Image (tube, each protein chain N blue to C red):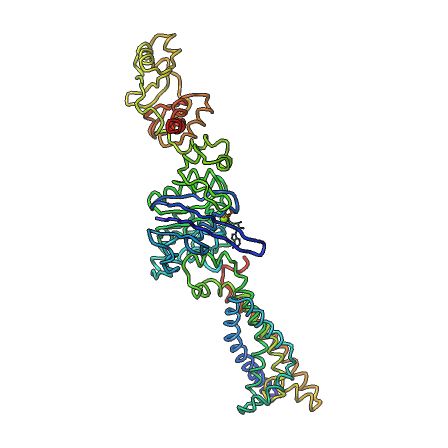
Length: 376
Length: 211
Ligand SMILES: Nc1ncnc2c1ncn2[C@@H]1O[C@H](COP(=O)(O)OP(=O)(O)OP(=O)(O)O)[C@@H](O)[C@H]1O
Ligand SMILES: [Mg+2]
């Protein structure tokens, strides 16, 4: 959908020349979010701006949907590309509603449709239209303005979005929330997005692909998991951080790692049958479920070995549970918090869905290293 | 007495119409010039320099220069040279303020506008001019106040207006006429300024006003 072909930008200034983009090659598929990542001044913004020709390339080309962007008239090109600039750039002379409606109005939408769209988009970025539609930009906090900036870029439903640190001014807690909202939205909208960030956590969370730049050069272009598991060089390894493997925990959900058919015992099973099951399945504890399958507690091997009776009378309570959709970071965090090496996975109603262990997690995270070794 | 009052009203209206026409024309020329020169820094420097030089020519001298020139088209004295003089003097504040205001529009806003696919004209109309209005109006205000003073001198070339009382007061050594003229000119300038302050705030987009 978006292809950069040997894209190069050299700035000539009185102080000297800066190579802001140096023969950058990459391709972003339709519906993907590609994060442009790297330290300040590495050329992220410049590369982004060459896509909508705000910055004319020194050499190289940009293709949009297979067509060279120089073949488009710039105005037509830009109307297809939503643009969120790093400085937010809301027009101070217009209300929030009018800011969002700029492109629709230029496209000739009628008043009613434009107004409806503004309302819809404000809701989408979690700002109450009743409060914000008629306000002016200066009456909004930086974070609120950024959300309006995102809404404005989406207004005419362009297939492509360029977003330059769109959540930079939002505090960490709200940033997480708006990132989640944005991802949810993206699931429905399926835009092709170039997204600049200098935050590795944001990149890992938001990106289908990550492009890491250093001094104008594209150093690695890969999936978040590969960037974290196999950084291409020491610069990237340093940039993504010494805890990069821990960051990979975010990329996997509990559902992907858990044992989905774990052995279990009913409340009215005897401890001896539980012990038998543990021996057969190599489990050191078993979840006790109710008549309809809700997780009620756990029987430990030590208990089953030392006592007689029904599971119902000898099980312990569950200190923590996780959901299938939780990421592994949440699961590991729960394990650490409760001094456990395992956790039961339940659904919203408490039904027992699976069993996840630290070993299982380690094993899954290690798979990519084992594959790499075998490949080598 | 009634007669005098009628005279004052008549001369005031005359004065207003002279200044009004001159300023109107000055806005129609100065604002586009101010916008145009934002495209080229060199041109901007030259235009602003010329306009500044113009301001330094004493008004009496300017009228003197125009008499032979405009006589050729039969308007050596009177309304036409008066309006032209004020038009020329008003260029500097109007061009300079327009230029500065448009030039100082936050580049991020210009970039956002370009990124949204606005043409340069749309950008001017939807973003740059609305943002520049308060500053442009500031230029118009100083031009108006200055012009009201300059127009008083235009009575010497027979343009009429409140300057008539002043010139007559001087030639007839009649302090009453002289003072009437001077006070009326000052009042007019103050009143015009108040009106323009009001107009400026009316024209300033709500989003730019201080909360
Ligand atoms: N208009 C310009 N003229 C001259 N040099 C420029 C210009 N724009 C950018 N540069 C230089 O190009 C390099 C890349 O800048 P760019 O804005 O793309 O960085 P960035 O990766 O977006 O950084 P940040 O994270 O700080 O936003 C920098 O060294 C910058 O100084
Ligand atoms: Mg940048």
